[in-house]
Image (cartoon, rainbow, N blue to C red; front, side, top):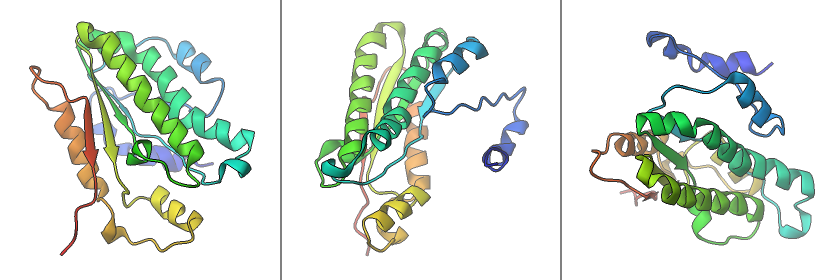
Length: 201
């Protein structure tokens, strides 16, 4: 029931020639099969990994299924998607951007499953960068701090704290940083970009 609402967000893609929307569930074990059934892409200028989920719990209470869901959406799914898209990225000498989190940089109580997934995703990006540099594929990890999104609002509910959007990064700022990575001249690469909320006056 949620797919029409999700797809409506991308209605502006109709402004571009022959847009194609592929809907896939990153949490599904059948993701790889769905990608294989879709077939390969010819060329791909950029691949942006922006999906993510977080469920806070101490290690003692995580549970196998919630941990697996987080790892699938935040780590396994993006890795499988990257492998499928890699020939097209090579053909276009494209850029892969992994939107990660500063949570991957430090330990915080209750964040074990999320941090494990994001630390793993950072490692995948590092390895991909080492493997694909000679093929002209650039790989960047963007690590934003807390950002004013619905996911952050849910996090604050889980933390039993108040949600104050003015204290967090604006999503438009994070988006602009990603665009700057994609627009970087070909004589340079940006392995990582860390963004944190700036003090407000």
